[in-house]
Length: 390
Image (cartoon, rainbow, N blue to C red; front, top):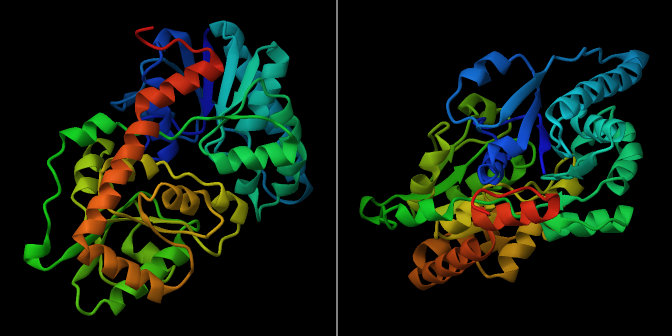
């Protein structure tokens, strides 16, 4: 079966969504799908980049963006219909039998759903995040919440990354969905040399890899406050992120930070595996608490595969807190309390037996649930896609 995959970002973009897409679709015959993305002015640059998927790419022309007053409500519909018609033309040209949409901007999901109705093909939302909650606080929120039930109930099948989003969609819309974990290349972590402690230099590295935004801010402020309490330990936070120090300081995130900048995805196994502690945060106060509760960051599988102790600092009702506590594969601090966070850090860094237990349990979960092949097989089972080698 040939399908069209719609996303606002595509590999080799550095975002977590792009990385997940690459890992899933790299196992699909490139003749069996095409890729559709909105052109936000970067299409020409993207065409020249190395690391793109081999399937045919389509870039939709930039939409009109009138964002004020009554015109915005009208332009929303114009943009959705315009994009749906463009997607429908591609579907017919490529003889696709299905649309898989991984939403990340406002228009992609409703336009893809409408295109599926115009062409009569199957429709699969691939919900890496809770779509309607991404609009929380924006003028479009009411529109999204009005139409999300119709889109979910009209889908052929729904893909989600975790049990919490699965339960949320079932409770809200009465729909079933299939879990496809956000995978990582477990084999690459096996090739990396084992952890070598920095203890001989008297420094402990807490590592975070990824973007930092309002889904994280207060958790990072708590972490840096906690580090300052650890007078007897030389702890530094190493950030591999695209944010600058100025941007972080504007959010009150400052202190013993070593800013490493962005790195290639291929470098992540080595970086993460040499961490004394991997930090996995979610905000306690944010504009979108449901999004936080159902979030499964793409780096989760990577942190587990790194076989290093993971410190989860997230609300008690979140998927992250539940998963790491359920499988005893990390230490969870589910209160917005720097003192308790400092106690947890000190315990992890000074207890070799705890480190060994957490690392072993993390590696077991990575192999069992987060391998690329397992995710590809689950995706293919839902959509009917043809895996390479089958």
